[in-house]
Amino acid sequence: MKKILTITLLLFFAEQANAQLKWRIIDKPMPYPVFGGQIVYDIAALSNKIYILGGFSELQQREVDWIQEYDVVQNTWRIVGNMKQIRMDFVGDIWRNKIVYFGGVTESSVDKYTIESWNFKPEASPPEVFDRNSNFGRSLSTGHVAGDRLYIIGGDSLNYGGSAEFPYIVEYNLLTKQTEIIAKINSSKDKPRQHMTFMVGDNIYIFGGVFNGVKKSIRKFNIPSRNFTDLTEPLIEARAGGAAVYNPIIQKGYIIGGYNETNSALNSVEEVIIQPDGSLKIASSTSLNYARTNLMAVNYKGTVAVFGGKDPSGRVVPFVEISEIVVDAEQSKAIPTEHLLFQNYPNPFNPSTTISYQISAGSFVQLKIYDVLGKEIITLVNQEQQPGYYTVEFDAQKTTYNGQLPSGIYFYSLTVNGKAGNYFSTKKMLLLK
Image 1 (cartoon, rainbow, N blue to C red):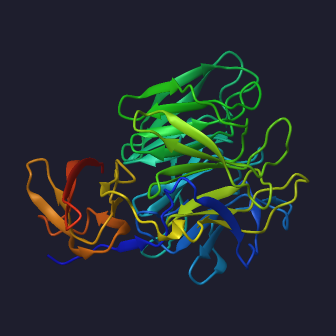
Image 2: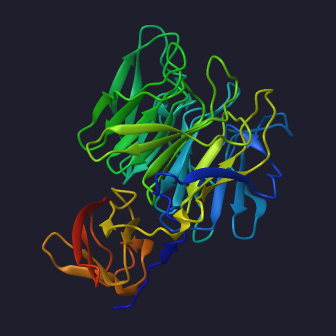
Image 3: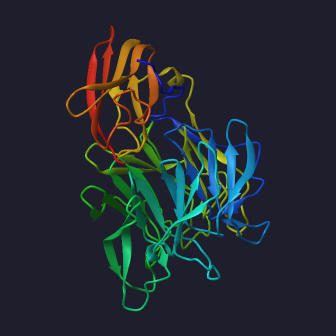
């Protein structure tokens, strides 16, 4: 069967306990720096392009409707389009071949309750209004796309004052355009806003934010069960208005920057590890070179990249920082100590997902996908490989298995045969259309 997927060998071993995170400033700052914009990256396609939408421009002294494209390989910036209206402190994510985004409009905006979509591949087309709904009239909120559903979390709403209840978590079906309120809170002067969130598997983790003060709290929303729970582990430092990024390759998350009652902009970074029992381990990590709040950050091929934001004086930070893993000479000789298959990300997925694994010695490796009846769909890897960390993209639209795969549960298995020992593991993933 023709191999259609990208395989990447990571050249560093970031799971070492003693490895240090380092932030490096790239040599070309943002030509159009903003704070409060929305960053979007197509991690499933392993694209070289990062998009930053909207935000507040110090050059223009106002919110903007720009769609900026940063080509990481070429190290070039350009404005590739304009949203239908200016937005700041809003939410955006990828759904199929589109970037969908909502919220963050100003008081003077004529159309406050829209969700827009921008088809950015294979060829970009002008953004359009996707739908209108009162729940899109928010700012300082967060959210994620999981399959064909968009989950809207917190923020300031234009519609819920007085004695009304505030829909804290709302599920919006991108196919049927129907909404369902998952969780409510009683209306109050301070509504929960400026959270930092990332999604791991079926769970959305919600960090900090403002609700009767800046919080250290961590919450978890489980998508299948719709359970919303408070976790016992707090952040080290109260923060809001920062960024949360999860790296599925090294299985660590980072809570970056933001502000609290003591500091108008933070440069501190906290590392989050999700333990096998579901608990979280929170530790301090290396600080940014520049303190930032209302920043944009993204996981780019195993590297965390930080853009924009405003410093303690309220000025926009134009410098881009990227993370590096620094090890000493002895540690750099290290290799994985065991074979291991990781959970795919994202999961649920549509149409693409990334599968990661590690091998501890040179071995013959097979990675295969099966349906629920055990029928093989595709072989992704079938070759000798050297020890290291690997990622493979699986695109459900590009198999030769009776055309495109339907929604449902699928399994992927890793088989490793070598002198250092054999290994076999299978994991489940969910395709949602």
